Length: 269
Image (tube, rainbow, N blue to C red; front, side):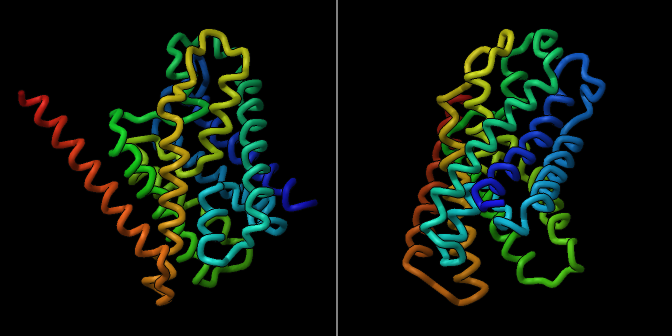
């Protein structure tokens, strides 16, 4: 199997299990309806673990453009392979979204709310706030890349690493997933969102393209910063990119805080 096919299949597996658990919890008349956030986070964690078990030995199972770009930014992955991986991840995510649609075919017409249908495919913020939502996705993916580096620096029983990575996803979802639904993966969000736009889903409404850039740009930014931060702080490899991104992170934090203060003032007024 080629690395391209491995990333495509791995990302498809990720979306089938991850989107599938969301569908089970939110769509009407599903036997898992109402099972809640913990079930969703566990489902996504197991989705990642299964994808890594499936293709990790072939491609390293990045299954996430933020991971691919983060590793490339610190020299742990060849830039020449980046377009191949990103293309495969996006195609796999779109196919995965289509499979989830088919798996829940009888439930779309039973579910009235268009936002609920979109939630099976992509994320949306609990409170819509551009800077705050961007910052949340940045933090979540920063933690993801740092976590992957931490896991890589430790020795585990052979075959256990994918499960540990899955537990990392559960931890991020439980702790940081509340504000935005924790995309932390541009392909995970954009690929199924494209599938949502293309598929003949009854009463689906719009695909919320106005928000769609945040779960793409935020994770890429956070992923690259997580990788360069680990290199700088834990390994002593301080680069110009580390300082540039640190300044940009402070700008993002300032923007989010300022935006929140303005909204608080508007409420008081």
